[in-house]
Length: 111
Length: 112
Picture 1 (cartoon, chains in turn blue, orange):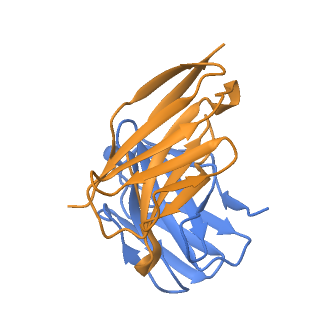
Picture 2 (tube, rainbow over the protein chains, first blue to last red):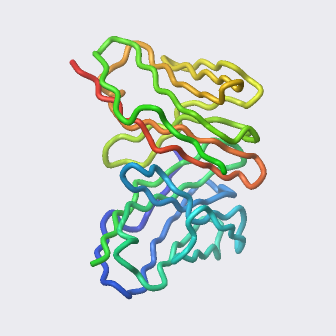
C-alpha cells in the first residue's frame, strides 16, 4: 500500500514562529503536493513539486515556501506563522495521472 | 478563472437508496475529472476518475457521469451504506504539470 506520512497530527505554534511541516512518501512518486483545507473552501493547493528540487506555486503560495531535497520528502515551511494560517494541511503524492494519495493531515493552530 | 464547484453542501440519504452528488466546473481544458472521498479524521481517498473524452464510467457501486455541454459532473452511489458517510470532493486534473484542483465538498449523511 502507498503510504504518505505527515510528521505531526496536531501542532500549536506561536505567531511569528517558523514552522516546518514534513511529508514522506514511500512509493517513489514523482509528484508531491501541499494543500490546506478550510471549512467551506475545500482543498486549496499551496505548492507542488514534480521532481527533486523542482517546485511550482499553487493557488495560495503567499506566506509559504517548500523544499524537496529528496524524492520521498516534501516540506512545507511557514516563514513567520500568522493566525490566518491556522488550518488543516494535507500532503499528497502521485505518479503521472489523476490518482493522488493523501496523508492523514496536520492540524496546525497558530496562537 | 478555473473553478470546480458543488451544488449542495449536505446530502442526507436513507440507507439502501441511491445517492447523487453533483459538481459544476468551468475549465474545459481538464484532462480528467475525479471524485475523492474523505472520512472523518482522514485524508481524501481516490474513488474514481473519468477522462474528458468520456461520458460515463462505472466502478464498484459508483458511476461517474460527465456532461461537457453543461460542464457538469456527477457521482452516483448505488445502495448507499453507512460506510459511505463522508465528504465527497470533485477535482479536475490537467496532465501538464499534473495539478489537481478541488471543489468545496459535499457532506453525505446516511440515515439508518
